Length: 85
Image 1 (cartoon, rainbow, N blue to C red):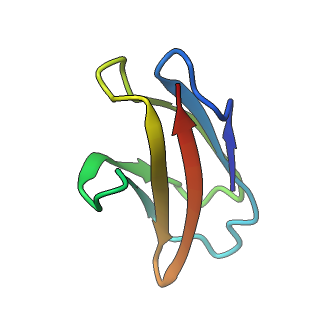
Image 2 (image 1 turned 180 degrees about the horizontal axis):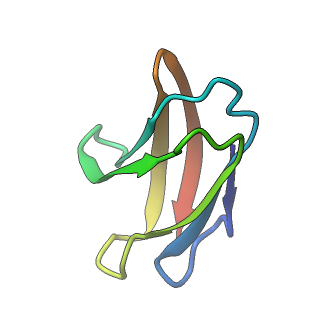
């Protein structure tokens, strides 16, 4: 999983997921603040692709700080830190 740019300045972050061998039909993306409150959620259709690239439009309303990006693909899960400035 790649998230860039990190830190985010304009509210848009690129998400690239590689190696989706036998991929699930949907990938869910949840972003949590430091208090564990979900501040962003979306689902992405993989349509059997081995790589997915998309832009998460977070907007400018999210406060500066550190967030956790939680990616779920079937029974697989990945978490990465995201900084918004």
